[in-house]
Length: 318
Ligand code: PMV
Image 1 (cartoon, rainbow, N blue to C red):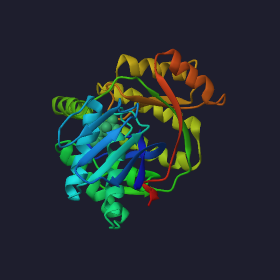
Image 2: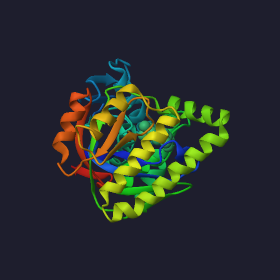
Image 3: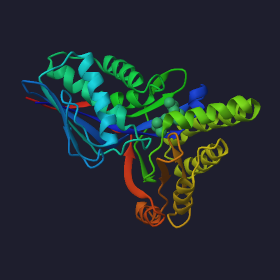
Image 4: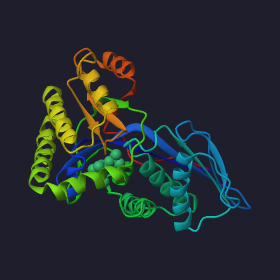
């Protein structure tokens, strides 16, 4: 059996503006997806009893399947299996990342699958090859609308600066609390909505995107200095700008305001495409406990995470 795992991700600053060329800043988190491959003569079976994927078992030949989130995961695994011409194998997915929440769950599954399946076949791909292939496969499944951010973060881990190209950043770990609204979102429709607004009000939205890019640039030295007070202020400004371009929601706002109020956060914002999904907050001097309680009381699902985690890795090869 060969098992590989890859991390999910969080976008700290710059979502949406990055689609139009502004800088964004993202990092890998400590929630991971793992994919195991073993020989199984007579067909291809993909399975998971993972709660995040709502439990399913599927035989690709008979086509029997339960759960739409699971269908999603299986489409990515099938693309990887096709790419490597793999057959007579059983693939198992375990993920602690909620799907469609802006935490890079599908990229983590694709990247872990590329490493697990290629290693199982005896080939050894470089990180660059894994990132490039995973991006191509994710984009194929998502019909052209994936950015390379998630697959690059799942592959390399750490932190990345994303603009016209993707470059690694050497930054210290950052503790955050994430609040999941429980509302799945579609990155595609949020991006389409924002781009439509940009077409209608180019002089307004261009200015907002430029301001968001400036926030990403200003955040980098603050990350080096661990200046959480100013990073928190930048998060609050970035959140307001995301609200302005229409990707907020009542649920997200409630979690953001609960974090800044009872949660005593240094700052809080939407992360990812918005419209649902997750928000993030930097814990204040009283730590993560009040923040976790405040997010839970506001109806969210909180968890603490540390950014800057390791990228894809082999867990087991036997
Ligand atoms: O899929 P999400 O929720 O992590 O959002 C991705 C960030 C966007 O800037 C909205 C889209 C992109 O491809 O960069």
